[in-house]
Image 1 (cartoon, one colour):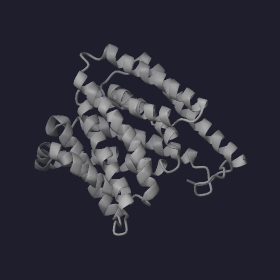
Image 2: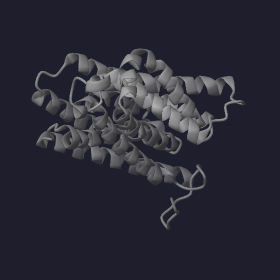
Image 3: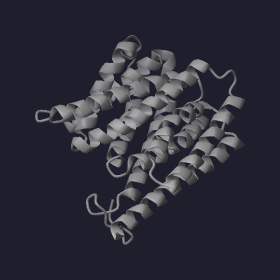
Image 4: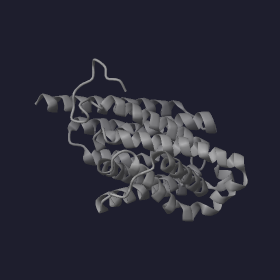
Length: 303
């Protein structure tokens, strides 16, 4: 992104990276959630875990070809970081796809977001950060309440999978930050996706195999892989290097917003007034945490 007159100096690459990182996360959220909505259409053919395995395997293959990671000089520490990152990706996706196979996409992401919110609160260092997290929590509470009140027979197993996905989502934030710091470029991401495929494939191999009997189904799975893995993970992996972990976590509150819209547009899942009100709270919290981070960085540089 080209520097503008409002660009500020900072410790990363000489410029303030908050604005570009926010745009990266926005692009990631849109791509990921619309990809997830499309993936639901794969479930009747290959199952939730089969769709997960296909998505991760195809995404790993694409990144390996494009990036060609050089792993010959990796240290033990770098390998541990990338392995942990890959395990988090695989576990998070398997749990999440199992959740949206049972409950609406927007509701699943709302419940799942408990993980990043708790992480954001735990990593927060100021009252302002806690206030923005609290506002995001209020929005997430409204989203969850709206989902419970209007979902017909909300599947408790689906809720449990969404909560489990939230725990792995928090792990994803931490491990992606570590891997992004230790391993240059996107080499770590490419290898992590291979690891995630190895983690999920034993659970989804039988379902994934069905896609190879239908070229159109395999092409659809490839599109899901690009939208739900290649694009969002590449953008998030770049953004996490530019933002503090707690700010990154709260900015991911955009996920339920986009998920609700994607579910409404692609899966005919309702978007009621309560959910819209909750969305506004979450957007305001995301904007607030970004402004707070920028101000704190300016004060630090001025000092």
